[in-house]
Image (cartoon, rainbow, N blue to C red):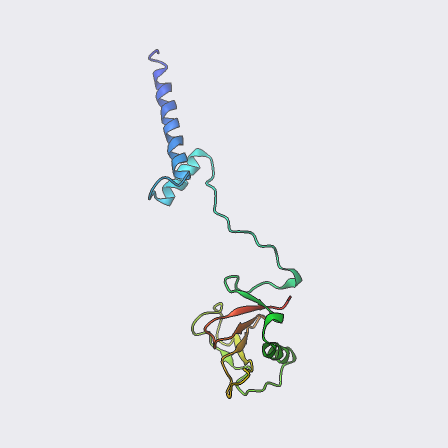
Length: 163
């Protein structure tokens, strides 16, 4: 090898080392490397790191879109008959059997998507055998969404009106 070709070899080795380092970082084997360093190395190499992707859900039919995809859904027809009766009263605007039906639900535990005060309203679902309002409720949101709580707001499921 001649002296004039020596700098070319050094540059080639450096380029290969940088590419190997970038490949190492992109493969996730860089240990605790800083994310900006990996992004910078990616930009230098001219490639883009693969981005993790969530499973794609098909768009809902019938125009219904869940207000919070993190909440489980329940089909309206799968609810107890008393809950379906309450939903029917809500659709008609009443009259409601309990004087507390329709009051503001404050969402203090933040189990529903965060909205402004007065956005949610609660309605009693009759519980057979209970001599008071019981623990079952339907909560409605200002945009028309509806939630089912069988356990006095400990858990919620968004009601899917399509089924």
